[in-house]
Length: 123
Image (tube, rainbow, N blue to C red; front, side, top):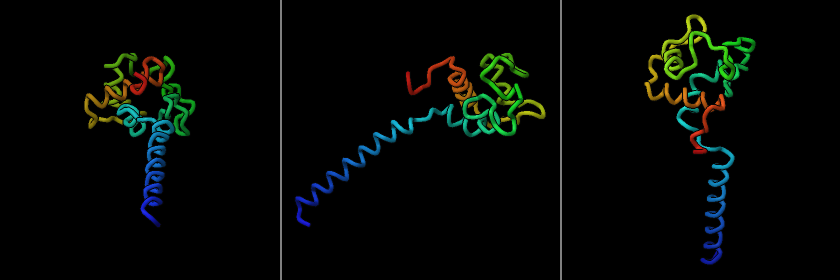
């Protein structure tokens, strides 16, 4: 392999890597901190879309957070943060190790799922 062929091969490889990185941003957009936390702490019960469409909680109207049926919560940000921290007796675990900022990020992402707020990536 001569120098010119190696340079062309290197340039093509570099172009493919850059194309893959751009495609990753389109195919796998950046997840906000709130979405990451939602997926880690909330999605198992409330689902990825907050509709409560999980095998364990399907049919439980309180698992669907996209409607107006809230249990132990008025739906304002402070009440939701309190429920995230304290949990709901026998239905939702408490999360006392989450910081105020983390709870606030989860609430912000819940607002996105409820179509009340634009995602961070679209601002």
